[in-house]
Amino acid sequence: MWGEWMVYINGIKCIKCGACVGVCPTQALTLTEKGIVFDKTKCINCGACIQICPANAISKE
Image 1: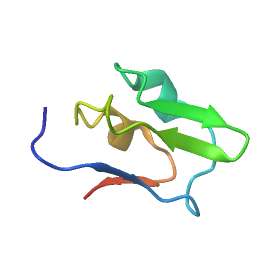
Image 2: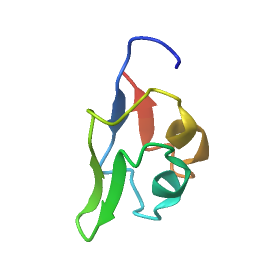
Image 3: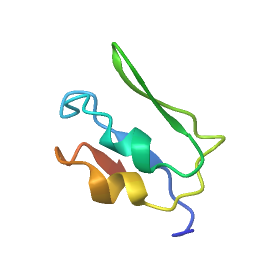
Image 4: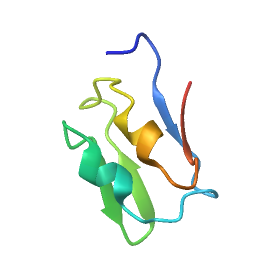
């Protein structure tokens, strides 16, 4: 766990590739036809999604 922050997904930058979904160890991210859906109750702040995103659409807040 990286600390007390939360994942933010920029829907405009997101290219809906699903790379983040595949690396999330807690399945906090789901790819839908509208984009990525984030379930903050499942997130453990590991940062894997931030590191893998090719569009830099995921950040911490």
